[in-house]
Image (cartoon, rainbow, N blue to C red; front, side, top):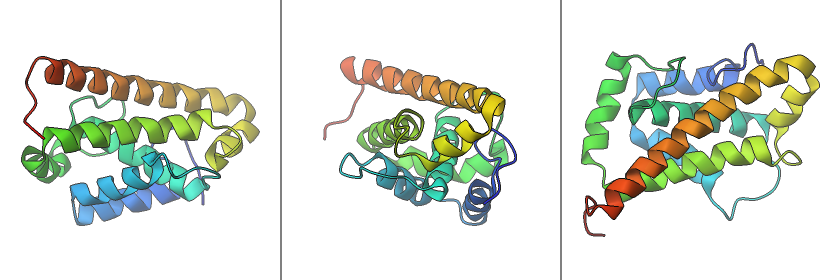
Length: 161
């Protein structure tokens, strides 16, 4: 595994996963990754592969929901098939995946004893601050999406479960 920068797709594992997503765009790929990492029953050590994939999946999810951040993983053309699938998704599924993305990023950044990626960045010294800034930005965008979904739901804009 090679890490060449602090942004979500700037490592071999994430780049490979993004390549798979470009080849066969599907919300199921995103859901699989976020479901595994965001599951509250999934506790303990998180290896670097899982961390990198979860972060890039959360970034793509954020882009898909209109909160892309400064550095895009997918361009508009690449997002289009995912947007078409998103239109068919229930608001409950969208809310769930957004919460899973936020939980996954928090686990990777905040559970310092169990995140191999955190350990790797910590060993990098000064470069860690750039990675933490990227993660802070991603968490902030995901939190804003959750808040917007909650506001919509509170206003009666959600479909019945």
